[in-house]
Length: 520
Image (tube, rainbow, N blue to C red):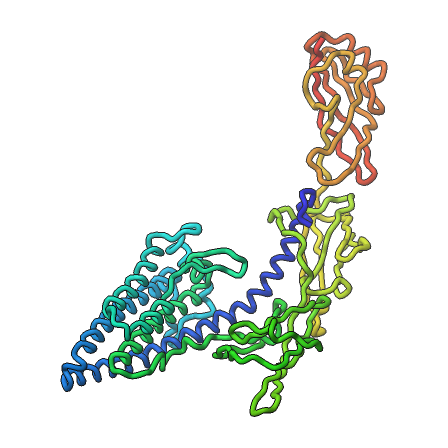
């Protein structure tokens, strides 16, 4: 569909197909943006709670340092240092969040007290501030440097005491900036993998989560200094926002249906797993997080169901948990869609090939209508032969899986076939020997025209300087024209004009003149 010979009209139609799919994705994206907003609110709330608890823990350490100086003076001193560097880093992350709000012109709604989550879809804010191509800008390098500096500061405060080794390992893991290898095998920098190309609300939420990591680190250190065994007691980092859509694809105009939940993976291996009526090898399907990998043929175009069963052993008895899901199969794209925006044109009097389809809808449930439009035999293929008027509108409707109707339309300009170009010996102007002009064949050609429309010259006129014009029938010089050419002087310009032609379709305009200078 996007081969080198594809017409401008074909490319435009393909672009419509791609835009339709993009519109489907946009409907779901608003729900995902709201999910990130929900997570951000949860982390903000967690940070407020953590701040209060950390303040109480630090006050407890201060009291113990006064009461038992030998035992708690050094831990309290370390705790105040951890509090100072953590507060500094927490506020620095806050400036990064403020950058997103300022550059995106986002502000808290005074009525709801919330940020406009669904509107925070810009992806270029941090892309422009932190990245230049695949590399980090000075600001991006600064972000990494600040994270590394925070880790260094905490490790310097803890020192080399072996009892802090586990805390240091958790710190390194929590604030790791190591390169990440994607599932496609591409290695990316930590900053690129986590922030480049993401919507503003996603990056904003990740930064809030990083602030939560700071608070949790501070809490872990304070409990460690107090001798407590608590670890991440108030953290939500073990959980993640999970968007559960009722089906995995939606049509434009449909209502998104699903829910957002906080959850985590249960790393428990089932005793049995069945999907689509087939038992799956548990040892091969379950990954390290406890998630089951699905692998089956999706079936025909349209809405499909996923059914199965998880079987676990609980209290010595099998416990079955049903697997129920939906997904939508859309036609596989087999080409790119490339179109010039203003080339929505069909030509009068010729057969214009067209492809018409609705994304995700079988061809037998799609209908198209317009004056001069007819089916071409193959799925999605039509021909258009426009007649009168300057525009033609093609109306397309489709019956969706739920029985509802969807419709769209596109308007094309109707243009006449362009004026042909007159040619002799392959040129419309130039020099030729006298004999070649007298014996030459006059042709009319449609240059730079996308359709194969041969033309037959039926007559023309010849003008030789100093002699009257001569009318000729057919495409060859008659005796009178040859005599006039033979009388001409060397260097004279012979003009062939009013070149008439016919085609297998519409009536043609006269071709442009040919001007030949006699070379002898």
